[in-house]
Length: 104
Image (cartoon, rainbow, N blue to C red; front, top):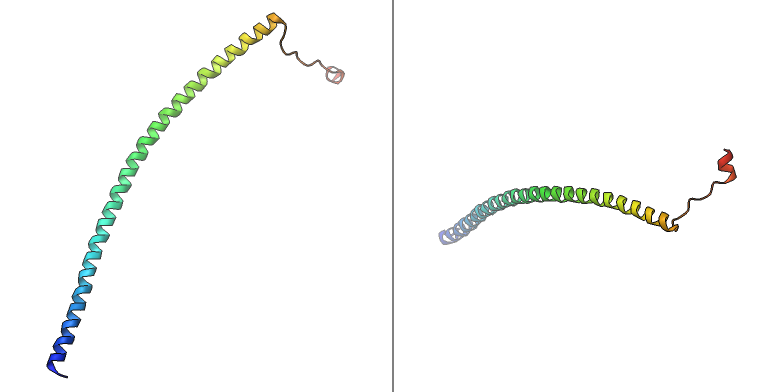
């Protein structure tokens, strides 16, 4: 083979090898950056989720106390309504016992 041809082939081979090596280095850097970004995002999301959970617990506790107060108020309203119905004589009558219930 001619020396010039060997130089051209070896130059192309070295250029291709260098290009592959450079791509490999860039891929490693990119992979490293993606892993770091992924870890940062995960830790940030964990912190946000922790904050949201504590906020949600507070909201749930508040709703529970509101439910208890509403249940107590509803009991008071029912009692008051029963007294008013009794006073006016318009309340819902209890169903009369049937013969089978009273004999059994």
